[in-house]
Image (cartoon, rainbow, N blue to C red):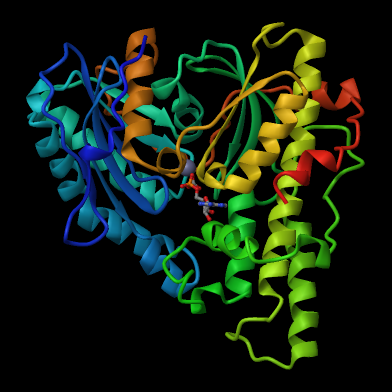
Length: 413
Ligand code: KG4
Ligand code: ZN
């Protein structure tokens, strides 16, 4: 049903900076959407046609800058978005061979995210839709992560979705394009944020292999060489029979262990512990186990309440942390053991990009929801729920989850 175009021949890294562009020579399709993403630290733009064909894409990542400063400084992110948005949009447009006049609509992330970053994308987009008299489609960033999978696979609603990123951790039932039931979410920080902080605390940036990686990527890389059994971190909130998550207590415990090991090894901050790989492996494993446990409960809840199809139910995992191969493999084993299929977008579409925003615009255009012909009143919203919160109902269902069998982890050790 959906055309695909992720052929590697269209993928190219330009000589300047970290800008990536898809080139495509396909003829114009009837409806075309420009998607713009600036909610955090990636400036992304893409033009997709109604069938999901990517006509042009460009991305400018601020990762290198934020790695050096030890985290995202909002005003720095804002300036970098402002410096790059015009060239990113123009690159995507010129790769598609289209002019703005040919667009059917502009779709832009307006929630949730960093206020200053969202503001750059929104004001740029509002100028553009005014100048070219185009409809505007405001996009919820997490809805876009949830729907990306439908660009690549024929996944019908409803499906279960686990969204794991640097800012969020949400388990939800996607009932329709703009209709989500939130079963649970993080009560404190997101898994990507925790892994970023652990990577920073372990000074992984000083390991040449990891110096250009995000914190989560660096943890995954190091974990390959570590033994997760050498550190024992408890799974947070394992006695709470709900689908909420917590990562900050785990991160504090990991930091405490790092501090202990540093004094045992007599090393200075900035040096890398001899057991850094073991800590990375144990951290990744504990995050994965928490995700798995909550996902198991969500599947059982959905089965009990008839929220998913009785046969061929699907679990979608998306967001930056879903790039993690270890987490994917654990969730694959869990979903397989519960008779549910797992689908994840490829890593480059799990982390933030313009394609997912344009695709969300296409989804909304096709469904006829949220298309604005006068966008002057649109404001960005740094905090915004994804859908209807039914986490209380999940908690009251009081579902006991069977202990994850160690054999589920054997082939991924
Ligand atoms: O979705 P995303 O690009 O931005 C947000 O919406 O937050 O997610 C970024 C997060 C970062 O915290 C990054 O460390 C994490 O995704 N991440 C990973 C991996 N690649 C990116 N976490 C674990 N393993 C990875 N391979
Ligand atoms: Zn994201």
